[in-house]
Image 1 (cartoon, rainbow, N blue to C red):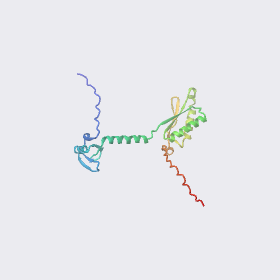
Image 2: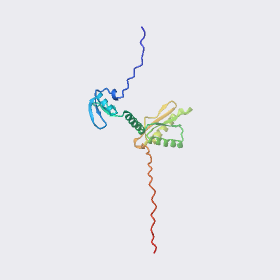
Image 3: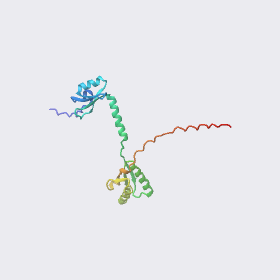
Image 4: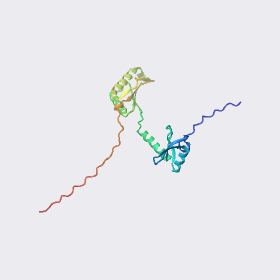
Length: 208
């Protein structure tokens, strides 16, 4: 007996919910003139096609489902445009990493602290990492103190996610932005140029 063959699972058929692919028996068909009518789906499809349009299911969970007679190509374009605009407005939170050494001097510390403040104000998270090299690993307490100092200095701008952690030869701490200090995205400057002022009218002088 031949062994059974393992076939890959069949992919579900793609349903566009347009015209003949609409499976509902009847729909509330909405037409460009604003009229709506509950009618069998095939009849609604024919009426939409007579108008040179497609019947598109826009509310499949309604009872009965709602379908509109529209230009499907234009409908797809508008939906993609809305999704694109939504993505542009959406802020992607990033994790900005700042690296320190156990003996980081005050100048370098303040420089990176200011960077962290800016990152948090932009709505991003900050990961502060202390790297131990060679024999420095014997002084992990110095790295822990530096991270706790860093977190305390940024209390107004960020909230600490847990205590300092060791990973291999590195210690790190993670801060999330405080909503109250997150700055809004800068708006584009609107250039409103005023038209040049008209020259003053000449004053007529009368001769005696």
